[in-house]
Length: 426
Image (cartoon, rainbow, N blue to C red; front, side, top):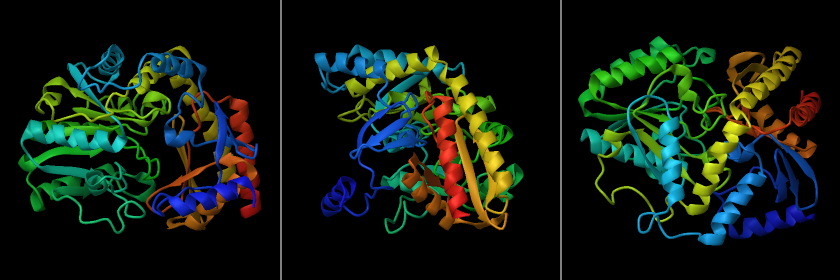
């Protein structure tokens, strides 16, 4: 039994079964887009901690910023005795989000917390209770966010009941035959059949679905939602937890639609691997909650705020939006070549910047998802030395989320390994 296997055995003995791990690869150290396990084996990372380390593993500037902060203090609780780094990070974020309306921010710790607080803020502002979300969306694992999430396995199975006043709509998805018009018609039917718009506090949407399969909402759809929400006084929440911080080639994916959300949730890439999340939105809406109604013990964690400030500097100075576009172009080209080689297995390749997906099917048929091949590719990838993730409501999508600092030649090497995997499995 090797060391990875030994550690997995120890983990299985003390970790609850529900907190599983994709692979028995126990990390010793990592640098940029490469990871080494406890046995010294190297892996090319196409996961980035699920879009968390957009600035790469162990970026020296983030390490230095966090070390400097740690030398002064690690925690005081921002709601008791705050500190300048939190204020400065909030100032930068409110300036970066789309739209000219004055903005304010709060910090919490996880993406699910950000979504929970966005719903709280929307309800406080509107004095309404209903929330609309989308099939295939993912918003977290807390009770409220599981209710919002539009994917049953593994996130919702066995955990109900969920909060009431949550409604789901079809997400527009051209590949699966769901048009913008059909989604908007479903919203109109919802208003006539289930809940009147005057009782809806918020509508939450991912501009690109993450766990749902990396499908992008058409710009016209987001624009129509903006108009409808304005008509009915509904708070429009854009969940940018996986899409934010240069991942899609813009700071936030919502920018592609040209709309201004009322609230935006963000986490993952915000702090280079340190736990931090935020809600940023229109000041009059953000101020609806009473003092003490928002926050948390570790909200605006000082080490994470220091890292977050450095992340924003790195994104700008290292031009990570442009690098995301270059990564996306390279990966789309290579994956499209594989699709041409295996048209019966690879149904579609899609990307927005460095948020890249490959959907696997049987016989080239979109209605025949191939979850078995997807699982096998992820497993065989680990054997070959490349870290891959799956996603999709039907479990048949490989998602690629390399750090945006990844050298193109190392990404090419990882795609060569993927090509070997496909050659052995198909």
